[in-house]
Image 1 (cartoon, rainbow, N blue to C red):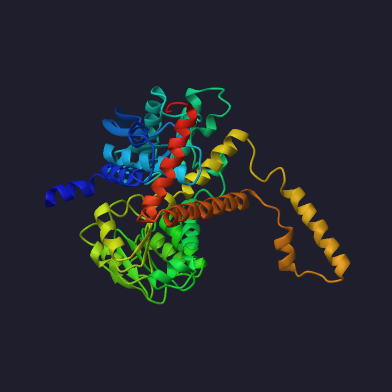
Image 2 (image 1 turned 90 degrees about the horizontal axis):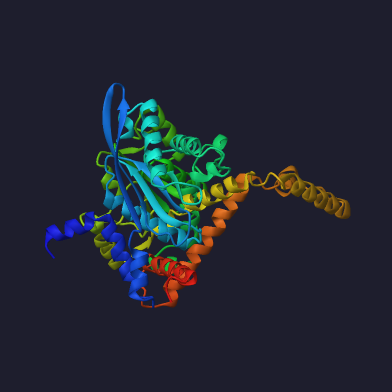
Length: 476
């Protein structure tokens, strides 16, 4: 294979996803036509629209891709970046389809992107662009609580989602479920507690489950459990920050953090919260107390560690640096951080790769909970929290009366606590991530021909989507 062809393949993100799909499809027994329907993007909408910004008119390029409508609504984030292109949006939409299937979230996959640098615009301009983009989606029926439900992604946040929800409601007066047209909203606008940290917490739950298996860890020369594991995190955005924070709280040792301005390293461990505060104060993670600066942040990926967590953008680990990666486990918190060429090199070295297809599904899982909350029009826990606490209090009093012993304050607080919204969200997320990992691993171990966890995850997703189409009566 020529170098030119190899480079093109590494940089076609959707091509990478298709290759993964086709590799996994060989381990299923579905007809080619059905597999083609699952693999291809159902709808690709590329748009250009003008926006008047401070006396000038700027033409914006944007996309919305609906990959699979085997279940409705379709679901997927919206990213603001100058790197947005059709290939990327198609790839991310496809990954969302498979991701939802793997974790049993009843959505099809979608993705959106606006080709701008959000840092180049003030808040008023960003609002104008967001509202105009939303109106373009409404024109073509590419948004709605039962049709297509966006969410935040790279370069966007709850602020943009609130603007989208308000614009949709303005175009659809009186629609009772209008607020469910988008997720990742601020709490005051129908958002859900726990959504901000959801992807990072999902990564934590997923890796914790993976490293709890003694047999799998023994093959890597590691002990079971997270405690004491050395971890390097690439990216200190929303996902990277929360992932690093939960790993540290779980007993892991965060020895390095990489960002676009550089990386920092401390073999004794970095205090994630303090690093975050330092960056907020100075604008950089560099020059953090007691930490060594690494000018080229990519070099941090190649340092010795047990677990490497790429939580930034795609193609960060590729054929040019894969041979120098020393981590025993790569946990894909970002979408597509490892190219297929790099994956082959890493698997040959015996590295365990926990795929993005599963691992960063925490965001869409909690988005599903937010969507359910919006459709039910009631906060989770509101109806039962106090009743639950009353029952627990009665049980505690009965135990104390019968035994003649009094529980201490901490024990009472834990037992008496009734589940609120965030408690229920975290419980549902943990249940989802634990069950999904064990299903993927069981598929991997049951079929000895399946070479790795990523292929196993695709097999699980393909089987669920194909069976959904068959049940619909579209395919015999």
